[in-house]
Length: 185
Image (tube, rainbow, N blue to C red):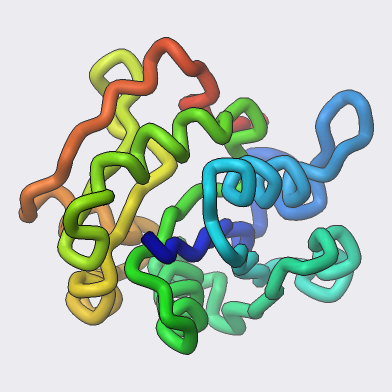
């Protein structure tokens, strides 16, 4: 299965006090590095980071070997960065995208592997997402067959939420792995 990782890191992070792409863990490791490493360790062949707010400064934190792309309309919400990430992935041979957010520094590669495993038999047609204690979260596996419709339906800050709600999605329990809560403060 050929999977491309996509990290959405374009937002201004107003509730967090600044662009989340610039935030670091207590040990100084950039959240961008943490997210990219989790996707690579999960089995993604390549990783794309979608930047927006403070893109120039954030680009200096993008790990080597990772493709940075910029959502110039990032201020329109998560849907703008999702569309840019899917468009960038569409230039590859990827069967699916494993999508995550930069503000989930506790997310593990194990969660990514568990979600990806669900799509092993039909990676292009599968939709799967991690669940933590019954609540939907990330990472999310988006099979290539769905990318166009997801991009067309995404609006504002909702990303793929409605599309996933309206289509068969495998819910993958990752509660035992932690890392499902975003860091808004």
